[in-house]
Image (tube, rainbow over all chains, first blue to last red; front, side):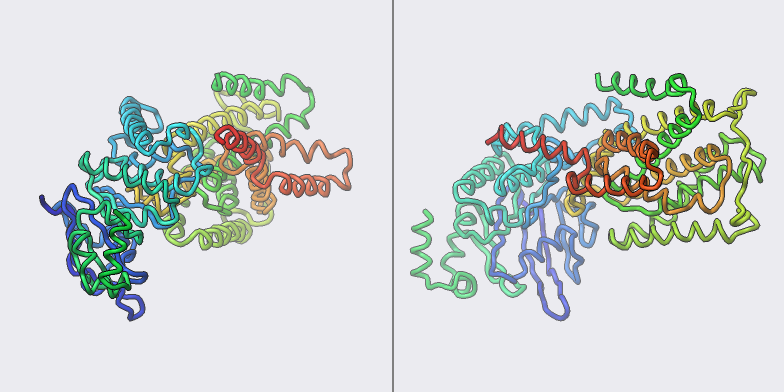
Length: 265
Length: 313
């Protein structure tokens, strides 16, 4: 396996506070990688910097061999990195179909002229998007809402819409910012299953999340941040027994962690 | 089916001069057509893209002056005047849009307002070009193939042809993927960015097209009045366009077209009580805003959503 996303020595400071103080990690193609850490550890800053929503003070971000450091957000998306947001972002006044269609329109061959005149190229692009959208809607189980405005959906359903939208253009990597925060537990299982299924089909994920159980169940590899620096990295099991992680993040002894693990399993 | 209905409606509107002998009613019809076009152009930039632009008033005024000057000072004809009004306004919109659209939405509102006020000052004070407060009277009637469109009834056909063409263009644009992207930008700009779309070309294009159409509409309207002076840049016009958009429902093409026709006629229908008509007009607007804060189209949409929620329960 090779790294699809490589970040090296990320640095970012706000008014003297080091939000990121030299963070490096890599995401293997075809993996699910978790990025965890206590509040204020720099997780969100890290993915905002990687996806171009914040300017980096230093460091390098390489996506599939191409240096995307410091590019504007829309260029990074076009390069194949799609992301979701912690507070769910969807187009609430567009239908589910349109939400998914907008997410992929920048990636097809149709120009504005094609769009305006509804040329053959435009129709082909729309048909392709429709096929992809139907597949993803089935996966997230929201078929009956396909034509409905997404504003009427529940919070958990909206998170699923954001996930499906991020997957629409067949990105090289999908970065999920707290995909299950505020989602009810039964729905978390569904999201877990959907992500596993997508991963088996070849999708790569980088997931920022607080829900340890969710991360433990899903991730092949987990990176732990604390105070803007990488504290540990390894498989979920390794992380759970790492003394430093337990102290800094989980705030519990190895015995308590083992108990937690049994509860999760 | 929808297209057929629109076509029938367009022809019915076009037949107005055949149905009445009153020049006054036909004149109100001309205003209704032109105001509807200007409101639909504002709807593109405000209702769809979410940019509240007061610059429309400036574009309207510049359009009026450009077309009048094309004929009176530069020896062109009406058609060239309207075309220039559109082109020059598009260029002006690109020039002021590029820097102002880089700021936030609130700053954009203030800057466009400043632009409109500035346009008014120029119309009043650049006397050697605009003739200042005296204005440019006696604009000649448009001519085509040796025929002079000198009466209000004949001018109606020009206004009708112009507005149908502009509305058809705006309809095609608003219902295309481009229109949908504008709505997406209005709703969630960060998400648009995350999906690889750069909002700037969309915002700038919608602003420039809206400016061109508003300017051309101003050009046609100045020839309907037959005179242009700084009053052409009175805030009354901006207010009218904005009210049409808000009552019709910002972001709804048909809502705005419907309210354009209705609200242009309403002050005239209220003439039975000359003293109170503007007060009654104001009251109607206030009540409408209380009952339907999203305009007529927004109100209909709410009802539709409520039904949908019930069905899906």
